[in-house]
Image 1 (cartoon, rainbow, N blue to C red):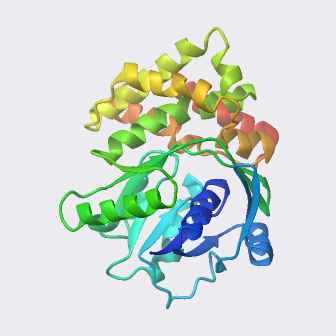
Image 2 (cartoon, one colour):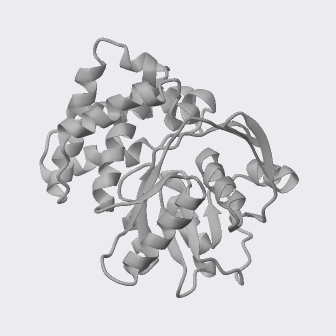
Length: 312
C-alpha cells in the first residue's frame, strides 16, 4: 500500500514507522520546518518499545509535495487547527482512488475533509496508542494501544476499502479494528481527550496522578455527561457509564503517560486543540440550547493558560 502520512509529529511517526516496517511504501509530509529538516537528515528516528530505530522514507515539506505523486491513502495526523490547510496542500496528490483517513484527536474533522473530498473517500476513526516527541528528530513510542476506523458513507466499495485499511494497519502491528459507527467512536475518544488531556494539562500531571485525586471521578462524570448531551443532539447515543469506565481505565493502562495536550502546552509552549475537544461541546451546546458549564470553563481555562504563557 502506498501511504502518505500528513503530519509527522509523535503519533504520525508511530504510524509511518510501523507501516514502513511492515513493507508499505510510505512518504511523510509535515509543515514544521525544523521537523522536516530532521527527517530529511536522519529519517524516522524513535525509541520503539525500548529499541532505538531509524528508517529512511521520502520526506516533503507541506508546501513542496510534488503533484505527480500517487497514494492509495493519505493518513492525516496534524493538529486539529492545521488540518484544513494540510488538506488543501495535499489535494493535488488525490486522484479518483485516493482515500483520506483521519485518526486525529478532536471532533468534527470529517466535516473539514468533506469540504474538499467526496464523502465516499473519507474514512474516520481514532487511536488509543501513545507517543511523545522528545526532540524535533526523535520520538518516544511505548505502551500498548489500538486503533479503529470506518468509512463515513456506508455502502460499497467503501466497506471493502475500510476492511483493507484495517488489514494493512493490523498487519503493521497497530491493532486495528473495523467500527460500526465512526462518529460514535470519535465522541467516545473525545470523552478521554476532554477529561484527561485537558485536566492533566491544567494540573500539570500524568494520568495516574490525576486519577488518584479525590475529585477526579466527579469531574470525569460531569464532562462525559456534557459530551453525551451534545452527542445525543447529533444522533450519537453515548453510554455514559461505559464512557466513564473507558476514561478511568486509562489510569491503569497508560497511567505514566502525559497526554498530547500536556506535551504541546506545558512542555513545548504550543497552542492546544482545545477548540476541537471541549470547545466543540461548548459551541454546540450553545447551538442546541444545552448547558455545558464544565466544557465552557475548561475551554476558557486552557485559552487563559495559553495566553499567560504566550503559547505559539
